[in-house]
Image 1 (cartoon, one colour):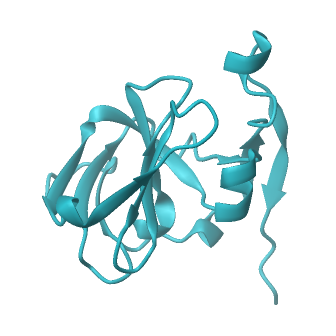
Image 2 (image 1 turned 180 degrees about the vertical axis):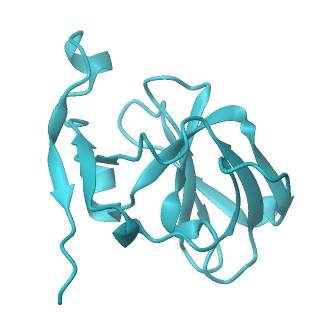
Image 3 (image 1 turned 30 degrees about the horizontal axis):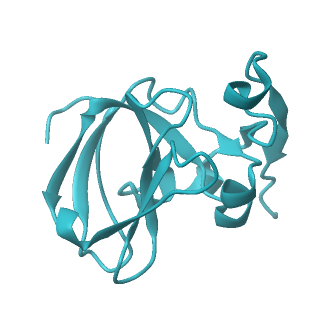
Length: 141
């Protein structure tokens, strides 16, 4: 893999799907979302330009889920069920990778994660994107 701090290898839980990503902004723009699907899924994601996602193997093992406007595409492994990435509704040229799928990365590595207001999505309201809040992780002593 290229020696670039924005380049990461990753996989689903069972290893059926393996990929490399180039993060658009490193981990500076990690997010969660409060829409009905993301709230249940609970993943912390980092942005990836459309050309920055490369499958090493297992793309055929992915399943796709769409809901509501069916604009966003949420991808998960059909074998272990782990959400690997999504194609964003607000900008279909942007994807977002589940940081928990990246080798050596945990969603608990981030003390604070902004939560976007997906319940009031800009494509629905015509207004600007807003934050719903911030999720904080405080490690036990």
